[in-house]
Amino acid sequence: MVTEAEHVLGIPAQVFTCVLSYTFLLIVAAAVFVVWYIRDSLKVDDIDKKHVFVTGCDSGFGNLVAKQLDRQGFHVIAACLTESGSTDLRTAASPRLKTVLLNVTDSASIERAVEMVRRETGERGLYGLINNAGRSIPIGPTEWMQPEDFRKVMDVNLMGLIEVTLKFLPLLKKAKGRVVNVASILGRLALVGGGYCLSKWGVECFSDSLRRDMRHFGIKVSIIEPGFFKTAVTRLDLIEADLQRLWDRLPSDIRNSYGPKYLEEYNKAQSFSMNILCSSDISKVTSCMQHALTAKHPRTRYGAGWDAKLFWIPLSYLPAFIGDFVVDVLLPTPKQC
Ligand SMILES: *[C@@H]1O[C@H](CO)[C@@H](O)[C@H](O)[C@H]1NC(C)=O
Image (cartoon, rainbow, N blue to C red; front, side):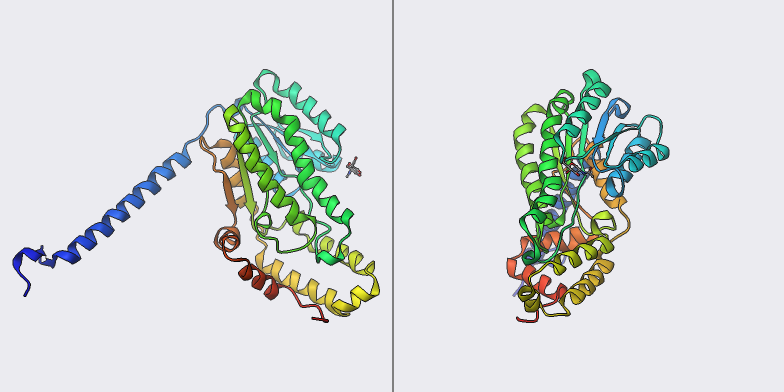
């Protein structure tokens, strides 16, 4: 028997309470999101009085973000590895943008760049440092590598980034500035051998300790984790040419254990996945960099690209055997296995 008292607005009381509590939870969640969204949208002032130093501006993310920040009114100092990269960028930007030649594996070259930035920024100090310079090659099966193959990539992507950051810290402290480090989803998931994933895991780690140590001085640190994008880092012609070099120098017993067709199958699988995965809209990455510099409250981590946000980063939280399975699906199996 159901009595009148157990009904509210003609609905059984239990159902009514349940609906009410779910509605309440939904309202709380929506309110939290709105507060987060507003906080995330707040911007810093005086962009025209701020200097930003970007590494790796010859092409790709660095080249595009330098132009975008220049258009936004920042004083951009764009570091390029090559003279031609630097000339092309100056032609495409406003006269405010300055370029400097920088090889992040060469201490003297870093010191020259710091000296130039010190002169440019004067009493203001450096507001933003975007550590973007990176390389991927040699990249491929671990057994095909020699220690120097790891070192080539680690020297640029990790040791270079660390040295650049350390040498700019005094200027960044002066401006209570920001560091934006380009890591990768491969800094969370080691999908391929060679120095690239190692270096990007290192960038994640260095950035976390830097953030925790320097927050007391007002320095903010953000990490960008791009998925797969069409840049020099994912250029298949260069990756395949270098894989051929690694394959050709393998002792024949190792090569035999993979089978004669392995390199060809590997290249085919790699180009198939890269063609599906690589997005040409690199502005997805540069808009994260811009947010990290212009937001009052920059985020700690930015996943850039749908593949990073919806697939790779969630996968990095799952048990390792699921990642192992994904790699097994993507890459061919050696003959002897
Ligand atoms: C960068 O500097 C290193 C160390 O000084 C040197 O070996 C390398 O050739 C340089 N790279 C370029 C592209 O100049």
